[in-house]
Length: 145
Image 1 (cartoon, rainbow, N blue to C red):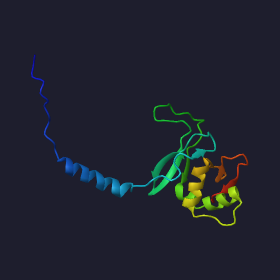
Image 2: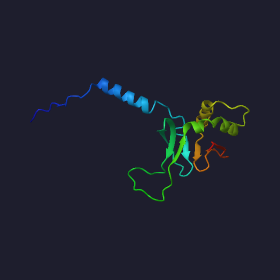
Image 3: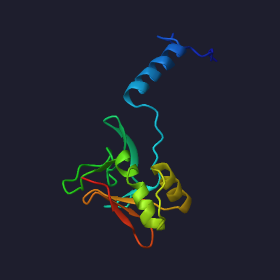
Image 4: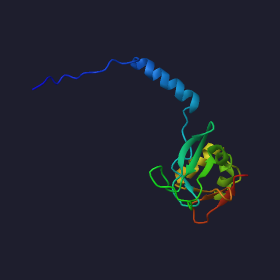
């Protein structure tokens, strides 16, 4: 039997230099961000959960309606849905007031925390630029144009 010792090609750069270079690249193109609406935002067209993405320096969400790079192009496919996170977060206090009937609105983080605690999903309609609560009454707010 032959020698089973591992043979390695010498590294071009040290592991420390590699990690440092990766941190520089990531830091400039996509700063660390926790996607705040991840898991609770659904597409109004297909009801799929919207995926988090980084777009033009901002946290955003998109839905490709089940399309992937592995599926053939279909001319009748719906266009992708996109929405920036900050466009929705700014209006969550208003949705909170509609949902709860309270007199004062919390900050966006407080409104989001309440949605998560209550297990309420949000449905984004790109055509009408609205967000609807996944509740029995389906409370809706406009998020602007």
